[in-house]
Amino acid sequence: MQEKGFSNPRRSRHRLTPGTVKFAAFHVLSLEGSKGLTILDVADNIQKSGLRDLTTSNTPEASIAAALSRDSKLFERTAPSTYGVCPAYRKDLVDAEAILSAARERIRIFK
Image (cartoon, rainbow, N blue to C red; front, side):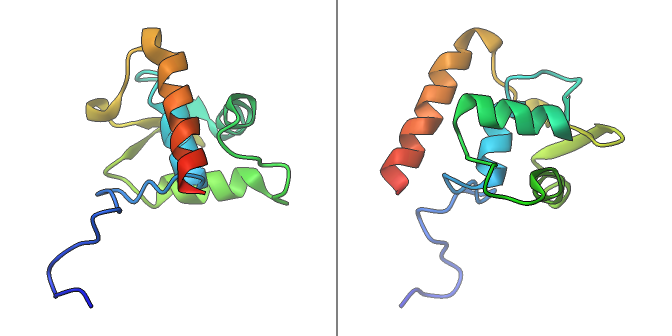
């Protein structure tokens, strides 16, 4: 049993659990800069990067929009149905493949 006030060491501050829509969206959006992406573009990039299979969901865009709108400390809404990652969490585009492959590895290990 865990004592009150101590958090689970496996959970990050923003609960970016590998394999979730939020985890995949964070890694895709962290490479996009200040303009962000529309929900449809986020869904396409998640599917292309292989971070999550969205074909099993009936409404992947709604799932992504819900995940992004619930965490305003991590994601920012830049325009209607367009989201980006807050400036502190943005990554350099040069490291894109390394970041995505590290995310895929975390998903593989987590399963």
